[in-house]
Picture 1: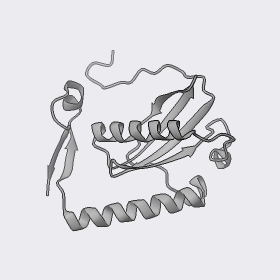
Picture 2: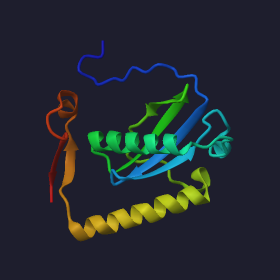
Picture 3: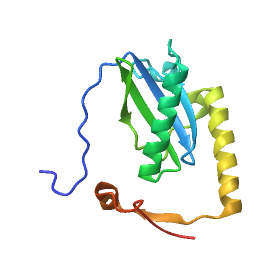
Length: 149
């Protein structure tokens, strides 16, 4: 019934840990323990933290996902079951960065990292995508972007 509409089918993951990760510029990643079952104002008050190995894995996966999607700003959420992270929500190119939602430490990271990235981008210049072509993502042809400088 969906025709040519792109849909994502996901398994419901019963998780023991959950992480929300900012990814800026397809290389800077900030991993945040997150508890989506908590009330909104307590979601960043999780009682777990990633191991160094899990943090590295999440960072690598975030960079890979954002590079494939062509997103310079994104949040990627992972549910962890039996030590394996599953990307749950990974298409947020305009992520929540409200200080009252994400907390002071996370807000300072996103503000500082985004500012540095945008200043570097302005200095260097780069083609800016004018549209994303999902068909190229699905077929693996190119980076899925058309742009101009």
